[in-house]
Figure (cartoon, rainbow, N blue to C red):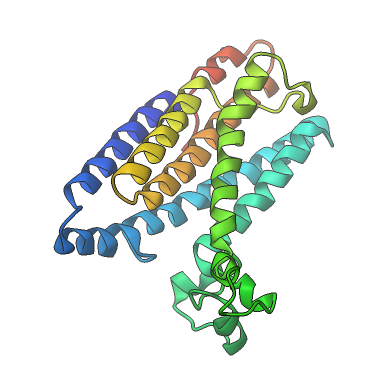
Length: 254
């Protein structure tokens, strides 16, 4: 299945999620349904993200090894090494390093310093670690590291999936060299999700989990598209799959 088709299916999935959220809002029963099935950490969205991270990790490490064989150490190789390590961290944090899958209880010390009593870093109580006064004005701002990391994650995703691809397309990002960027279908898909999140979450209902699902989906689409581009670049000159085909949604194994 090619990335153009997968992107179209992703559009359909995201529109469906926003429609479901629009239906289940307002009343206490509707919000309870949404929170139980979609928002909580054992809900559909979190579980879906955890599953999608697995092929994302595999694809980025595959691209790292492919680049290492083709060009030894280069900017492309370094890029996918960083992405491979980064996606492992994101996956680990998503499942609280196994707690959400195997259901173990965190140790007493982690329970004490983690705002949600989980085995992860993004919910650490920074206020407690910094020794801030619980009655002080700054305690509430740092009692959960996620208050800082979530906006940073969203900003990083915007840079990765919107900023860098556009800058490279207009030839204003020579530093990343031959690192493949996602095609414009994927950029438009993610940009639309950013706009939808900013509008709906700020003015209507909480859709943070939906937006995070769209980020993970974009990671997967981008990884598949980048693999197709690397394959096209590494193919013999006589290959029937030109590099341009990969950039426009060439077929990839998935």
